[in-house]
Image (cartoon, rainbow, N blue to C red; front, side, top):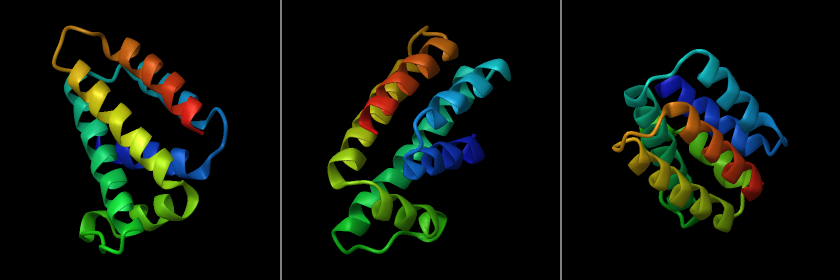
Length: 115
């Protein structure tokens, strides 16, 4: 889940259309479970939060030392903040009986809209 979270961050930071959707499709095919999805979303949210703090001069912690500068360099503050809000929203959906496939599909559609 941690690797998938970092991959989601890299795909968002690369700003390549369709990259997030490709990841979501792959994770759905691999049958990602709700707990792993929740952990992936939390890891991604943490990296985006570190990137936002970096935009305001605060250095990221060890875990985000590589990904936070990449995100801060390639995305606007508005894009970072919007992504954090979506990650929190869909992380909350994992607490309900929503299938991971539905969460991945909806998340991918909304994240692609941010790019």
